[in-house]
Length: 111
Length: 115
Image: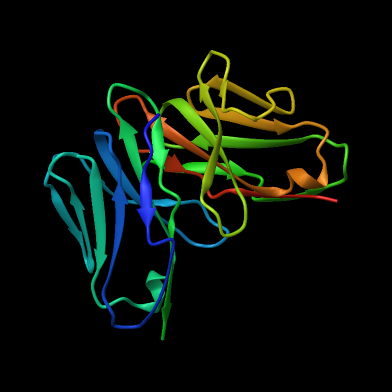
């Protein structure tokens, strides 16, 4: 069974600061997704990365997939209070049908 | 595209009653749907994987007789919590995956409160 370690688990920062969330595994994933969830709602897909070394940008969010497709990072530039939420990474098993979720990073951005 | 609905969004029931939650993929066909449970301030806990036309695969520790899953069509899966008890109170979320993709698209969740 593949494991996906996500860090940090909790992050409280001031508006305007930058932050990076990491997801790491010892196993290779065919793709990796990042989701954001707000309280009382379901997770919303932000991005999917597929190719090793791939970098995708979504406004102030930058997602990177490791060269070996074992790890990924999410970098937020100049965080805003609206970025507050639970960020989840999820890796799709190679050759399988299961998706492995990280434990989540709870981000709180103070105004 | 890739919208998943879930109904009801919130339900309060008495202990001992059964509650059915529906999960629908609105604009795509989902061979596979997933049911998760989420406790406050925690990540998602996969309960079971639902495949259209076949029996669901339950994760270890999840009672299949208590959490009945039916995936009768490519756009609908249902989760029935039978003889609900207060400890079953939680946020239940479904997701659906297209045939040729890795991404899961989540429903908005159902808040179950058992009195």
